[in-house]
Image (cartoon, rainbow, N blue to C red; front, side, top):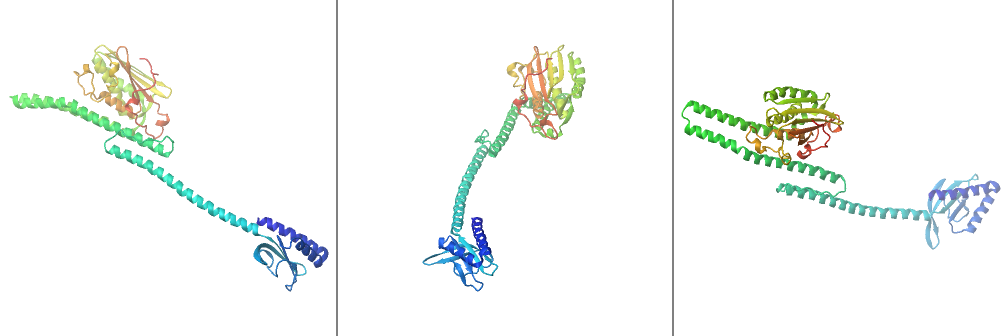
Length: 439
């Protein structure tokens, strides 16, 4: 609006200067008088003064605002003064010419903009306060939901989980992570509870037997030889108990994920061939036939010692439960993005309804209770497999049992660089697609 006012003033001044050049001061005076006759009260205002300050023509009282643009107020009789935006110049004959235009619309526009800004600022402030209150209230409600869940868990309800809203925002991602952590903690506590129960149940028998042996030695031993034999039996029982506790400690360390920090690329082909070389003579000693077919260039990401123990436990389990004259086979082959190792035997196998239970700690089939062992071999196998994200599948070999292990390729993103693979649940470690080689 200021630019529009300046343009109107400049246009009028240019016309008046043309009149001055064409006819001198008289022509300029006539032009100013003509304009005042047409609109004596505005919106255009004029002032033509002599160098002495005497008014030649105009509708503004004597005023010398100097050169350039400025604002002034023109008084009116019996009414408020008028705001005028003006431009003053000095003519060639030293007369002073000032042309102005009514600036009330601009002033009203300025006032309107200021009022609009004030109202919009007030509305914005109210909306900001209301929005902040709503957001903080929502935030506090969600935090209180998490706090209530935490208090419920501390009170003993370990199955409680934080409800998600399904909005997919950062809070939902946090809730998913917290619930996954709670699932892991509940599984760990359940595992501890189950182990405590298993220890109390399965170690009571050997400890009772040990106490009875010591009691009989105390009451009936008549010579040093009898005491020595009783001591040897007690030492044997204690070794079995210590071996059981050692196995439990080993499983606990593996399930904690600590060995994952030692993971490196392992030549699985060379590892399997080494294990086969160790166990083939043992199989021959039991009059069993042990065959192996291991593909070359099989590499996995993991701990070599633990992987060796996992394979060894599976082979020992097959040898222990296979009668004399039966055969045991090991096949290792590569698939796209994975490697598969199959250990099979032609022994009695495991009934289908029992295959999901043999991974429990201290669980033993009825026919195996008379053979030495603690029932921790396959539990250790599953713990190592879960740490390495190895899938385990038990199937019927017709006759016998087939144990299939599926390893991920070390070049997959989950195993690249220094990233350590996440531990999988026990259920996940036992299942995978049925794309395994036939033994």
